[in-house]
Length: 425
Image (cartoon, rainbow, N blue to C red; front, side, top):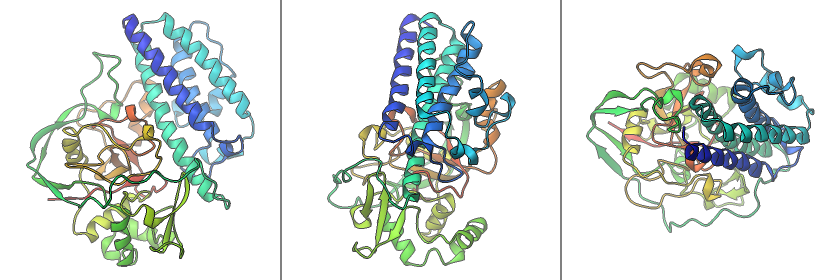
């Protein structure tokens, strides 16, 4: 690694770490202790865990005579790396008032100081790869911190807002008509080649290796499904007809009593009869009718597609289209913090707004090999019982997404900014 590359990596390190600080700055210490559902984590923990990652995987093995900030943190801020020792059950994270937020910020500053020194002294490619992995890991946690605090504030009877002010006005004067785009398919390639030749060419291990797939001719919608369209599904008793639902999904509809997406609530003051909770507080559904519906799980997305006589795209179909689409959209850098209405020609909203459920399970590509050692637990151990989402959301950092990126969640997950794009044979 040359000096210029190392300098660029050091700048990226500072930028990502500063963004985490900025996102947490609007929250009180009390806000940062809350864990409102099993999938979420306290924001204070997000800040500590991402710092633990750099201390554990970069500083301990590569910084000569490194002295940990506090040895107990090695277990306390582990997440699921069982090969490193027993972790703290996530459902208990909210019970720890100590260490204080002040001490965690001191931990971050301590590690940042050591990382700055290490990056100024080394050109080791393995260090660079691990730092890039840690930075992308932290960007994942930036997004998770916003989704988690949204759920925490929604769970609070006071329903506080993360950010003040109304949602920015929609640019589109009317909804973009849903159109079907035809794709010939055929033999193509998806995924990424190994980044072994260039330490700064980052991708996660589950995006590799690049491999051939055969696609039949298919159609894909030009934009994501809107709140207006999903409201039609609700009004047509979509949640009460088992014929639209996969068996596990229907069982959860009955057990959980789902009647609408997460964060929707009946409200007679709005002409639609509904209002929606956002990171900027409550808004009448009429204000966001033509924006993508979000916070629906895989079962809801699949049921809506069946109701429309369509299906969800496979991840290979999605990537085939996205590979020829400019990487732009309503991502974290816009500051909107909520999906926006489609506005343009061609394929819209593939990147940003909402993660889009695909019909594909999260499994290894042909020839997949996890990273060696504990880092192999990052993705490989989660290749069972989870579905792939593509494209990023309105709270995803803009330089964190790409056409090959594979996100994944359990099919019942609703707290993430997840939405729907339709496809047909």
